[in-house]
Length: 262
Ligand code: KIV
Image 1 (cartoon, rainbow, N blue to C red):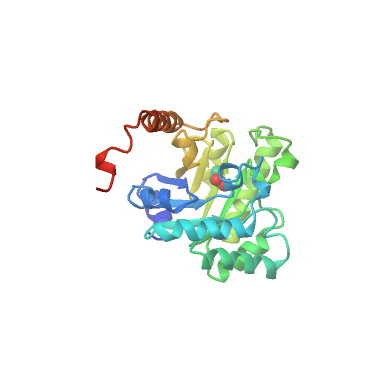
Image 2: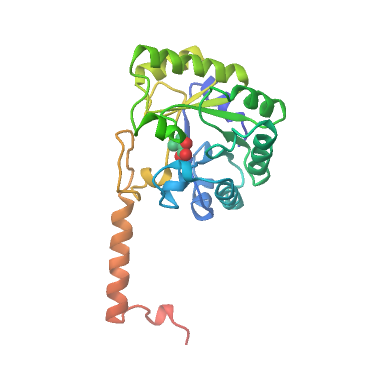
């Protein structure tokens, strides 16, 4: 699946369904699913590495996990997050970092915010690297926001996010993630833009949705933001399986002759 899916599906009034992925085993399952595109999100700093926020993601982490996902995600469009500050160190360093993710197997990169990023976005797009924008609750700004808060509630903040969205489109972004903004604002932004907006906590009137895989599988249970829907209680399934395994090992019913070499 190529970047065309981001043009074709919205044109046909079909919603785009995206998900995050960080490893090869889940990538193999996603490869055989209806998912339109995959994000190696910098949320891996929290989900995989147990860090308190995404500012802990590094280029080494993003590169390694992009390679792992690409090893089993053969046909789907893959986007990788540029980690914290990796696109704020001058044009040359930013281009080198973006190139590293593309060479690791990504088809596009995502970066957060508009202020100070428009030049690098245009440059990457002109150089053949598709760029996805990200506005609203941009997690790399957690220390500026002072917590995980819905963004764009006040008139001035709404206008700022709308103006930033228009600027990102003009700079050449092929799509835009809108995270944790009121649904009405997301609807307005989608109507004003030609590029598809992908929502996470942004209501249903955008071109598509994205969720963190471990959230939708119910594997991550310590936090549950309002926008998360669990499609399965994955944590219970894992706990029950581990309990059965422990019990059988202790009863010596595992391994049976079926799992033993004669
Ligand atoms: O890092 C991430 O997982 C993301 C999505 C939540 C959009 O940026």
